[in-house]
Image: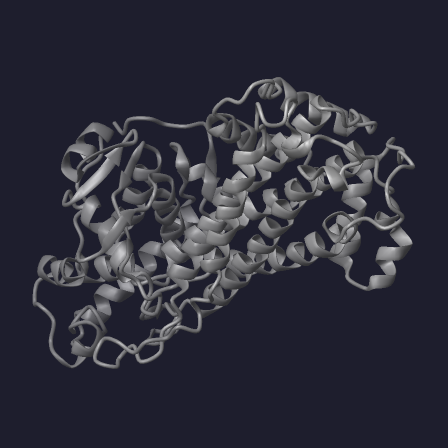
Length: 502
């Protein structure tokens, strides 16, 4: 029996959402309805009939890529080896187990559409894997995102066959050992099974979907922290005016303003601030609202990827067609991931500027420099701000679009490529770095109240402040803050997940 079953569940007949990908980090039950099983079986029967008829089918009777003009290996097991083994050349750091498992989930949903011609036992095997704590060990570098994520998905298939390495309960070990500990059998594949496993953009979709899920939390955290900063400093709130923002003409900006107003309900300005605040306060609806638009676009694109079919060729038993094409070319997700990454960097710029304002006594109505209770003897937020600056610089350097870096490869078979996999992983990295920036800002707001800023007047913000203060004591004397920043980042994710409607 597979080891480690979870209460979380998904149905293969339902739509796969970006947020569902996060469920794959732990054991996940996926239900296989009979109608889905039937369409997978019907497509498989059609593939077997076609391949037995002498008709040329890419990857079934042929070699791969530019070697398509040559015959493949005659036996199914040999053709499976042909597909997978020459792609086991990836390098770079291993992707986190949760990302690899999210890719398995994304690939499962594509195969379950019944257009790839895989064996039923392949679908059942992926379902079994997701029900355990097994994860393939997959290097991040190797895919150009053009003929799908060939190399990373080849590592998935390689591990499921008991080769290479894998994780079980977070521990890296030989894949055969991990399968045994998880109670899983090694997966047997023929050529079509193997090609269907590797010839899609499921790693790209998984990384982008996970980035979108975190980005949705991040822009809501930006709304929350901007409101908290407005309240703690006693700023005026007319920059959130419904009429003002409606006149701007961008619905997401108006929605962001409404969210900030909701957080600020019950707050009153101190009357001691400038008539017009710095842009890092006054223009937050416009900035965060624009990011909201970019996140929403990326979410729409990745949702289509997660619920479409990325493979080649596709099989249509109802019309007896085998269609060769390019449904593995990840250009939509590449563009979306690049734009999402840019939006996340701008949210990072905002958080860095807000923290800079907060530690500057000339712009906080007299709070001590670096929010230190005893400047000079203790430095409070000084180290946090330095690391924040370094983090923003790293995010900016990584913001170069990957989707326009096309390089011809594969004997010019892949003469134009989208690099969506790299774009998606960059967006996921940016989302992770942004969590640190938001945690640093939250820590600064907590410390600002300790050294003389007012406690939030808005009831909802006061509750949030108390939760942050309960997690992190004030800085009375300098101490390491790295662990505290991680706890605050987790807490902010938790808070905005609880208030979905805000």
